[in-house]
Length: 309
Image 1: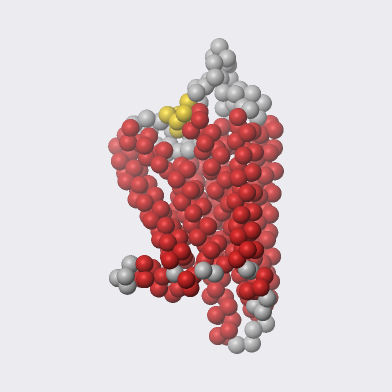
Image 2: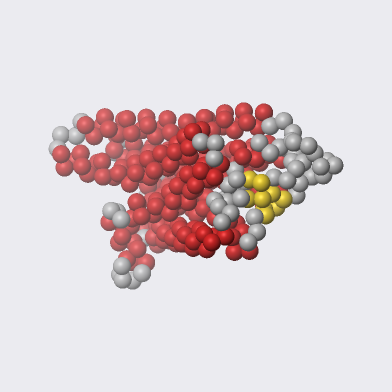
C-alpha cells in the first residue's frame, strides 16, 4: 500500500455484515435483542449467586465470574455496531479500535481460563470429595479467579501494545463488525510478521493450555465415574458436570468453527457471520444452559423475584 504523505490514520471503517440498507433494521433488531438477553441473563445469574447463601460455593463463584466475562465480551463489540447502524456510519476511531483490540482477547482468554478452573473444580468435587472443602476454600478459589483475570489482562495488553506498533497509511476498511486483530494486520503498511507470530503463539498457549487442562480433568472425572457401582450414583455425578460440559463444547466448537470458516473461505463477510456464534450467541446461551436444569439457580431466581417465577 502506498502511504498518503505519512499521515497517521485516526479512524477505520467497520463494514459489518452487509451494505444493503433494507436489511439494516433487521440486523439492528436482531443484535439488540441478543445483546439485551445476554446482559439480562448473565446479570440474573450474578444476582442469584450473590443473593442466595446456598449458592456461595466454588462452582457458582466461578460461574458468576464467567457471566461477568460474557457480559464484557458482548459489550466490547455489539454496542458499537448498533450505534453505527443507527447513525448510518461505519466509522470507529483509532482509539476505539485499539480498545476493542484490548478487551476482545481479554474476555476470550478469561473465558478460556475460567472454564478450565471450573473443570478443575468439578474434578476435585468428583475425584477428591473428601478433600474438596479443604482444598477449594474461599481463599484458594479467589486466587484462581484472580490469576485468570491477571493472565487475561496481560495477554490483552501484549496484543494491544503489538497493535500500537503498527502504522496504517491508507484508508482501512475492516470487513467485520469489530476490529478483528488478524484482519488489521493485513492493512498495516509496516511489517506485521512479529504480530502474526505473537498472535499464533499466544493462541496455542492460551487456547490450547486451558483446553488441555479441561480434557485431562474430564478424563479423570470419567474414570472416576466409571468406578461408581450404582447407575444412580453415576447419573448424579455426571449431572453435576453436564452444564459445564455443554458450555465448554459450545465455546470451543463455535471458536473452531470460526477458525475453519476463515481458513476454508476467502470471504471475510462469511468469517464475520461465523464469528457471531462465538462472540454473541454463546454468551447469550450460557445463562440458559446453567439455569434451565439447575434447581439451585431456579430457587435463587424465585427468591430474587419473590417466588413469581
